[in-house]
Image (cartoon, rainbow, N blue to C red; front, side, top):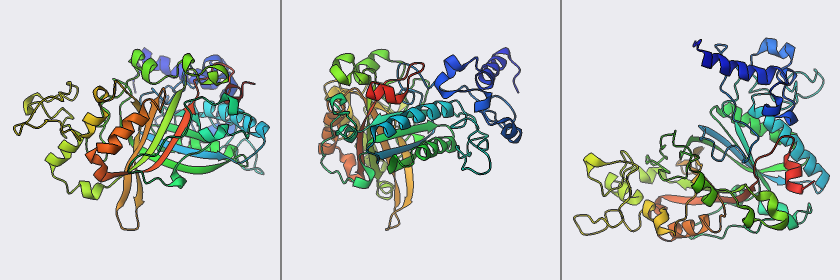
Length: 439
């Protein structure tokens, strides 16, 4: 184990946050984080939350509060649990209370604590535990919890119609869509990402448990293997077709691009919709990939479909010995047959900002496998997530271009779709109820 001052300082900071109130101003007063908020003394004898099996301090948690919600530009974690929910109550007070309770629980869990103080065993033997307990011995694992609101939440049931942002309107249909209503839409969404799948599942499971009687699950999706890099510190990952995905993604370090393409500007949301200033819109698309068909496709055809080589993700116009993933794409380059070296119907050409008037998006999707279908084919693909400043100005024209001409469509089908408004981050003492309702 390292004994460097840096390691000791990090460990002390982590322990201070959890063991005393000293770090509460930073770590979230609303969550009531303290040692009492960790497993109770009795439970602590049975576990060592926020530590790894060697007893070393776990990684620093991702801050829950800030200018923007975590889980958008946060370096993409390895695993995701995403859930879309319907609000079943007609009582506005119940929804407000739920959002307050969710804020408190979400903040606690992102710091590696139980969903509520003493939640696992502190409630006594005669009541169901207030925390399901499967993450008790695990570190925070870079957990982020991101909330979003669907267009249907603003239908008048809860007095929110006047606060609906103009850009929060349903996505249009696209050519080739085969959407399953049971995998689409929702009043609310919660995205939990972590480097440990059990931590992400624990977060969603407990938030749903807290909402019993107020919300119901509409659909959910587990994801693994991020399909894009959201930071320059990350390598570009590969999708289930084996190609690097999201090379030209908007990165967390590019503030100008984030302002232009990801964060909602105050001028975008005048009047009562101003609560969305600094937020972002989340587009989700469940994309089934027909991997058995793809696996029988020749390499050259695969590369022509994507418009990049499979080995390093470089543009096809570059010589083999000079291929660089991040080298500029040359759409004018011709091959020996005098045809564009990056085909007109290739995925990368159709989705490139140069072909879309400068449109860019921040992708944050995950691979998925949901077993096999009735024909014995793998039900696998990409759970596409994008964060944008305005989905109708960015995602819609991009997807229309892809739906119209992308030859990749022969190997994929879109089976789920949703749009959510993700509010900005919370300041100290704020909660999701007051942020959404204004009081």
